Length: 231
Image (cartoon, rainbow, N blue to C red; front, top):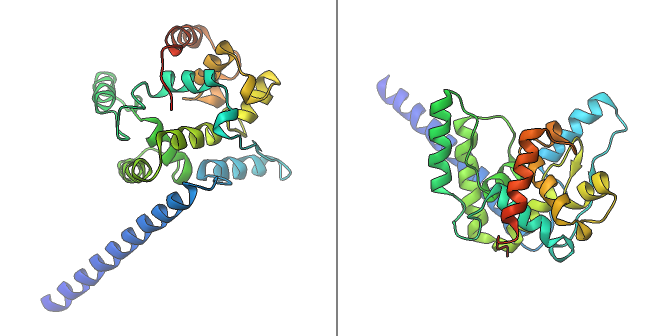
């Protein structure tokens, strides 16, 4: 009886290991392909599309891919300033930021600050869901490490700017620039870029007219972004 139970447990563990390994290889293969090819959609896009079509079957997402060189330098600087000031220095994980986030969460008694880098956010947006769990965070970390291994910082920022959500059904810098300012992403100025950067943590809530706290953050981003280095 014990031998049979041991064999069953061993087979179950092997099956779980094979499934986990298969999933990681699936992620790796996609990232390897996307190193030189642009992703047509993401997990976040599919989730948003399903939600919108539940309300309106004809609903479509606003998304147009724009090459890195045709995205405003101001937006690149604003996003890095707002989301990941150590983007060029870290290997996918900002350990100081993670420690600060943990301290904030402990002080508040709840999980709100995440300390995620642009690479981690990109991993989540490409493959995972917005639901918070230790399992999802662990998978996010594995994918982020793969991204840093396979892609340049320029490619990471290019893909992030093209898939980030900037409102209900609005994905990518070009769609955001057209929706909020009626200009292409290449023509976004410093102020518009700072406003868009502030929207990223919660784009469906902040919208184009942020409140006093978000306005103060826009001013802080604007003050620092000119000195921010990007790939």
